[in-house]
Amino acid sequence: MNWLLGIILVIILLVGLGLALSPSTPETPEMPTSTPPVTTPTTTATNSTDISNLIVVDAPKASSTVASKFEIKGKARGNWYFEASFPAEIKDKSGKQIWIAPVQAQGEWMTTEFVPFVMTADLGTYKGPATLILSKDNPSGLPEYDASVSIPLVIQ
Image (cartoon, rainbow, N blue to C red; front, side):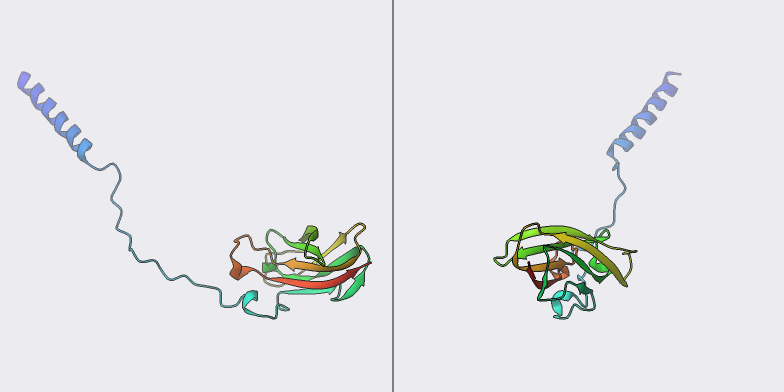
């Protein structure tokens, strides 16, 4: 009977030793050391001077004179927006930002078609030359996806 207990004990020790020495995670195949080529977009607004195929501003028109409270209206392709908005800002003649706000899509923005937008800018008491800048929302921060349209104005 002692010899049977000894054999069982040896078997348990061998199994335990085998488990202790075996790797705890399955081996993964070795990954290649070279990285795949990075693809870049074929067309971006920064590669083209014409962005009229991305955004159309109906109001205000370039070089127009507007009141300190005025409407910004137009349409932009769905990929100009991110989460249904894009930034709009107004800078004075020295380039100082005097107003910023998100422009909201007025329809389904998850499309490649044009989506209308409309909002009101209120500059309070500011009067003088200014520039309205409507920027493509670029959450990646990558410069190749940046695009904007600048509209010179006179605020009265």
